[in-house]
Image 1: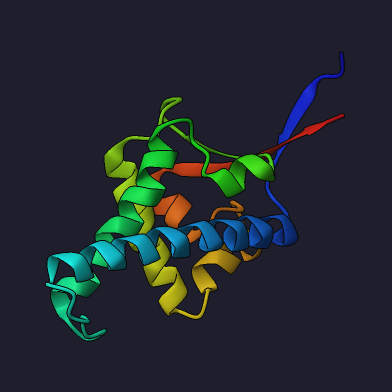
Image 2: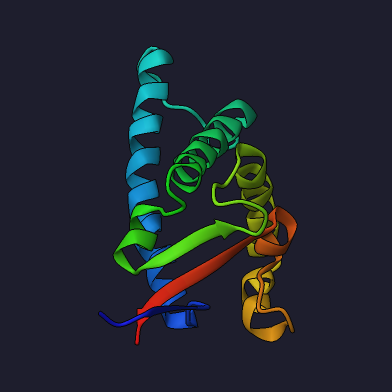
Length: 142
């Protein structure tokens, strides 16, 4: 049996994970939107409704947070053999998941700079990895 060595995910692998998870998240948000419309008496909810926006952000957080805290992999991460680990313990806490989620949003708002930092910075960590004290690894068989 060959030993396995961890490595940082390549930009292409990380993009594939993001695209895969985004398709799943959009499906979950569509279902969440349907539930919200049912509870709104069948009336459409405006996109600028702050309660609806917070609701969709909360659904998104629980989507990612549940996967991160239960095995360290979303379905996209599992498909592409990417693992999220904590620098202090083996399991990701909900506090770390919340920090990672919030800083990832900031990273996107800065035109993705927080994500690119993983390949630009010395420590090869994205902004949300640094803030949440986590790290992404891909296990490659040698």
